[in-house]
Length: 264
Image (cartoon, rainbow, N blue to C red; front, side, top):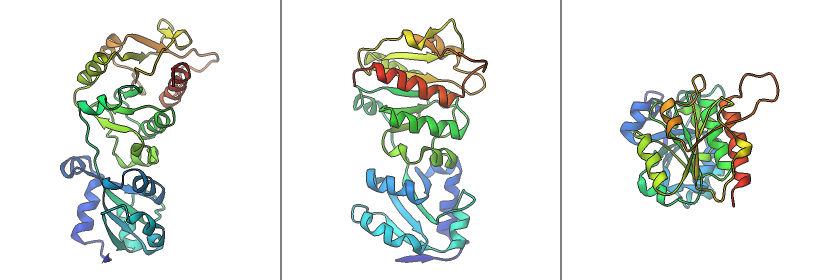
């Protein structure tokens, strides 16, 4: 097994650059950190793993999973782990994984399940939480608009907690094309507005799961262009004095409300 003990090692420097979006896109890879998320990828998508770097403490835990994984394992020390880490306290295990692909065929393979669209969402905690909630609610995937945060930003990845290995997560350059593809598959398109002139979520009825839900930017909400495209714009009634809900909380309520009406 290869060992790397120097923080100046060229391979470590190259891997460390994956913290930057331009290098992730250039290499088609991103960095995972932490045993929990690495176990998720090894169980669900071992073929995505290209390399594992770990302090000796995790070698025993890794062995049962490596039979199904062709990725190389490199032993590192605590100093190297600290350099690679994007957290205050690292547990010393990392993986280099392939960025997932996305195409029109991806949609056709999930044509009977709902999708979540994040328009210009910027906060990594919100983004990751919405991916996790979509996973729990049985959605096919989460689509990030071009202007949203990169879903493979280290903070988003940490917040997703491995849910990206259970459903589709992608950032698309042409959101209108994605929406048109879904419309052609008879999907119902829901926008969301903080406006009591929109449709109260309690008035919506569904016969199946062919729908998608669009959530907007934390400060400005859903863009007017997307609100115009939507078949219905939904709002959650506010019963107390708060002006609005956090976007991730609103998305969770809406997803579960819709899914509880759908024929699962």
